[in-house]
Amino acid sequence: MQRFANRVALITGAASGIGEATAERLASEGATVVCADVHSHGVEETAKTLRERGAEATAVVCDVSDPDSVKATVRETLERYGALHVLCNIAGILKFAHMHETRLDDWNRILSVNLTGTFLMCREAIPHLLESRGVIVNTASTAALAGHPWTAAYSASKGGVLSFTYGLAIEYGKQGVRSNAVCPGSVETPIHDAFEVPPGGDRKLLYRIMPFDKMRGPDAAANAIAFLASDEAAHINGIGLRVDGGALS
Ligand SMILES: NC(=O)c1ccc[n+]([C@@H]2O[C@H](COP(=O)([O-])OP(=O)(O)OC[C@H]3O[C@@H](n4cnc5c(N)ncnc54)[C@H](O)[C@@H]3O)[C@@H](O)[C@H]2O)c1
Image (cartoon, rainbow, N blue to C red; front, side, top):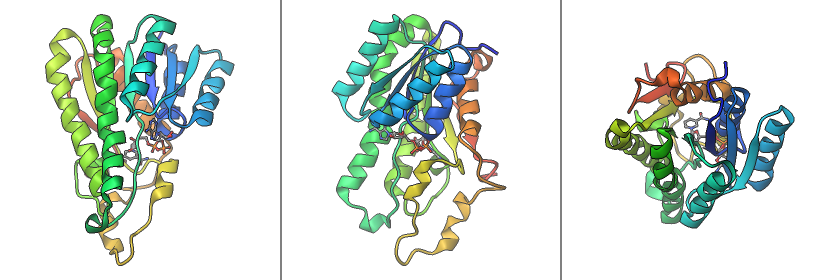
């Protein structure tokens, strides 16, 4: 399949996990990929791997929470490739703590990367996506759909991403830009290195985030993102697609 031939895709979080897998997936199907991430070495590695496989790919060091960095990333995409067709907002961070012990700077940082970063990228990209009748795929979480313990800031950020995506879908859908979100859960990536039960936490509360059958690799989420970004999903706008092995069923 070459669902992304002649399309330019900008993918945040492309240095690792789901973002990296999505960059590989879209590139393997013909996309020109701009790999954006705050992790400079990781994102260079992703772009290099794609080029070695014959794809057109560029790495851009970008902090999605920084408006100037986001602006520069979108500008570089347009200067280099002349158009933007697909925006996948995948960058994200996670930290575990009891809500009443969550530090305000941690709360602000998580909101600023996960939610504000998604807003900034979309705001900058929308004029170009309106020109190309392009598509947005944002990354929420099962934490947006059900209670997860010790992730107050993360859950709030992902609930915000989902609502924000619904808003984009209705606001820009009639102008030809589709916006959807994925809600992953139990996807094996380095983000889980952050996992720890805070002191005194009751492990039984974890039942909602335990894998339904097993963890799966980042391709499981990348496949869903690629589907939503493709024309196969032409009649899908404004959904949050769970990719969690059925954990919330
Ligand atoms: N793995 C899961 O089970 C799971 C579940 C639900 C949601 N998600 C979401 O999927 C997305 C990808 O996570 P992952 O599991 O692949 O984790 P990951 O840690 O492997 O990847 C996250 C990437 O985001 C990048 N990043 C962090 N802060 C950034 C910033 N300020 N600017 C630009 N890039 C930044 C990191 O450098 C990293 O490359 C995240 O939004 C995460 O919340 C993952």
